[in-house]
Length: 311
Length: 313
Image 1 (cartoon, rainbow over the protein chains, first blue to last red):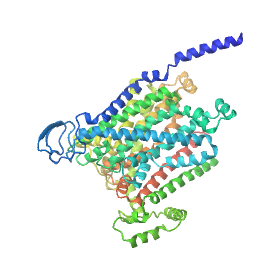
Image 2 (cartoon, one colour; image 1 turned 90 degrees about the vertical axis):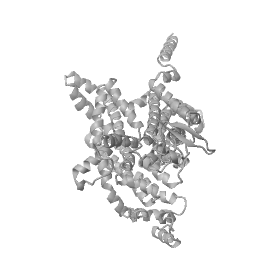
Image 3 (cartoon, rainbow over the protein chains, first blue to last red; image 1 turned 30 degrees about the vertical axis):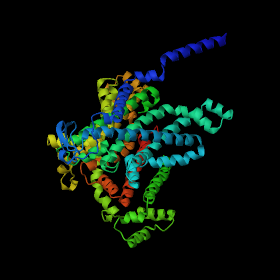
Image 4 (cartoon, chains in turn brown, cyan; image 1 turned 135 degrees about the vertical axis):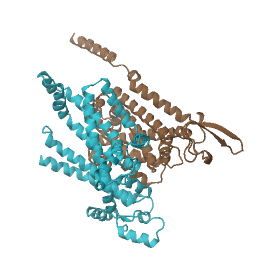
């Protein structure tokens, strides 16, 4: 009798929970920040992918006769075979006569590649170190001291130091931005591991002789997914900003690659007369990072409500 | 209490040691011979050999580290091969603009961000709150140099209110000094304001849910007193922590802001040093900024135990 009653109560509780907590996808799709941020990110990805189809020309094409044109002006370019083509430069040209519109659109590719690679790399490495360090006690002390040490160096400064070590390039920049982000992921994952490892189901897994890698993979790792996805989104935004900053300072990706930071770095000299060189890449950059951050905010509110209290 | 301070100090040592080792290894990790890197492209093999002997590069790695750190502790950071001066001299020359810029930004950011955060918390969910938080997200998304150029464009070029770029030492007149520092400080403050106001809001909202706030309201205290004397005071710890952690953002921002506004500070020096592959300077700059960052956070940590007797470590 009592047991039956309890079962009924449990079933009722489960039903109530099911009603109050719709599926993750449903909750995500109902969140305004996720919708707006996600849509904006999607648009940027499409722009990056479809850059050659959107009326662009070769972003590296130098044309001395059409230098420093204002946005919206019509320019006539003489082609190699002697014919002339007239087109409108929507965002003007830079001091070498390159088309800013084409450069900005192609620049979206680099920014998104950097953002996504940095986020995934720092998550994979950070989750691995965090899991191992959080679960294996004797490693924990050493690993966390190294992480503390890495965190003691301000992120951009650490990246600058690492960039100075190697030849400038996309790989170097990604590496230099990943390293400062790793300790943050490790700390997050470790804190989850420390709270989860005392749970009864982990104890149960240990008592039936589950091997360590399987415990980490099957029982601990799933708990870190939600906070790590949230963190990864913010890292993606921060990485896009960091790449632009490094390129802007002239120590990032080589200047012949069109990135938003490079376009702005080249625009610095003529900024007083031709602010469009900085304006357009800046708008794209700000919108992209804003979109990623909004997506992150929305993900945090839906996936990890505990975390939204902290920040 | 003193035991706590001692423990905290001891815990700082491995962190600083790690930074020192990292910075030391920076030059040793560069592809190629560090002596050749320091000597530059036009050096003769004799010069390279002389530098190698001077730096003790023939010694084993740990001996090299002890030589290097011993010299560093005595204030000898070697010589910049690009600027042809000792690094210590170079840093001393460049420190004033950077310190002033950071100080102005800090004052500006805290005095704007904390009231904004409290206001947002008091109007939680209202349009004031949404506007402030919207600004905060925007502040995180726009890079420092874009804010800088936007402000230069509006205030210096369009309206001609403030000088475009440059720096005047404080000794050359306070008026000139401060007027050139307005735009850089505001530029750098934006992201910091975004960070602090967000934390202030979250922290105040959390304390507003406490029982003693209800008690204070119930005994008829005016809303402002409750908000400032009861809520903000108890919300202070996370806010001050974030101000400390935000110093890292500030340092990164200094590097960029000094480049935008042509300020001859340590940040500008960092960029010039990387472009010239001037490793002795890069090492010292990273070392110095990291130590400042760690020590400020150490002081903040210790300060808690003075200001907040509830905190027992």
